[in-house]
Image (cartoon, rainbow, N blue to C red):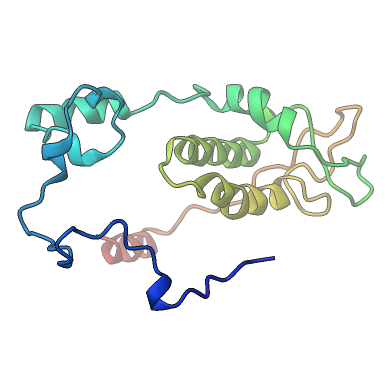
Length: 188
């Protein structure tokens, strides 16, 4: 139970008041740095005591702060993170989720996993505490729905015997010159 102090003004503790009874006078010239002895400057987490960076410091800080990627390429990402972490019940072409261990044979899957890898690396080094959560919700889940879609996804007919070789590329006729010129002029 919380105890509430019901002391009257006559019972208040006044031991911290000044001897002459004056109220504390906050001066504008008080500087907490004057009270700091400087012995533990390296242990200080407060930026208030840090030296001002110079132009040279800014350039070297940018280079030193840029962390190398955890996974150098999409293959390392898939083998080192995606496959061990992402776990779903995969079916053998019965309308459930489809995955082919030969993911690298599907250009769309490679492109989507590459995008996921790049976004994951960005989230990993982000200063934002919610960056990785955003990666799961905004990047992984939409791509995963397409990659694993057992009805219309790129690996929809994948079978455990590996007999499916992927869907053929969609047909595309050459763009007629007059339409090509029109399209290109609109985007220049």
